[in-house]
Image 1 (cartoon, rainbow, N blue to C red):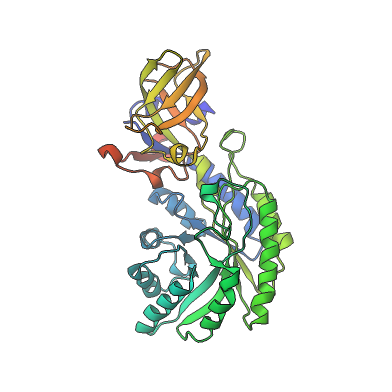
Image 2: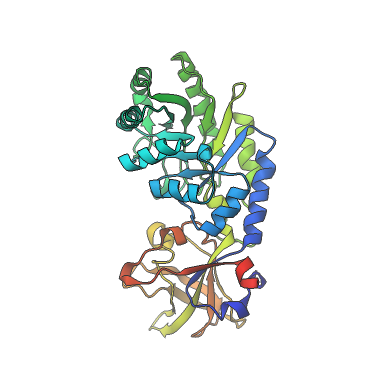
Length: 386
């Protein structure tokens, strides 16, 4: 709703900027905690969604751990005060310095994605006379029914260890003295709103548990990744994702052993709806068959529409006039710098404030300086409203 946005205060700020409604973030975190606190569940917030220190502090204070995919994210989690024993480190291409950082800090777990990576972690841990805890990321070949660019659990994807390779890796684990295998990790993709792929994934995990046990491995930790989607079309009607249905799948479908802990790596679903990209209209350009709203924000501030053809709800915060049809575009010197085509907005004029919604995930964290643009500032509702 437009009254979520303090328009007079916005008019005093330089656009574009990211705006985070902390009331929404805290309500989202509370909804997650209601589902996990009475279960053997541990949430690791996925920093790749948004690593803004102001948000990380709130997430840390909620007791969540961190899911990291780079050494920089591991360091950001540590800087935010997240305990090392709550940090998991995933990613197909961990550099030696990143692995050494994790070993030195004694993070909870490396999610290992290949045999060469496993051997490298062992070698580096041996040099320090330390034991590195690992979970094997298994590619379950489960269709997530999401955009092809954000599917991660199919055999042709670059992520994880294929089922055909698993036995070879397990044999290697048995002889690597500086490796402790504590769990398995499965992640099938992102922006998933249909719960049936998660149910299918649980079935694969149950089969894998039996396979691990047949090879002599009893796992204490099952990491099911994340990927829960949000409603980009109607953010105000669906500010809080359907965490109840999501966690219910794992409570009902996983065949857990006594003492096992299930780990979740939620990112987008925690921060997407609390964030908006606030922009100002530079020009209204009228073509022969189109009208263009040209903003001072572009794909450098929110790349998802250009990268994934992603939809974001757009609001004119300044106008209450009857609607017209526009293409909403940015100033970047690329034809793909388009937020929406044939989009209905109240009649819009130069200087109007525009909110591009659900930008809390993969907005600020993917921003670039292409065209030598300055990176935008960010503000929270606590700061802006005083």
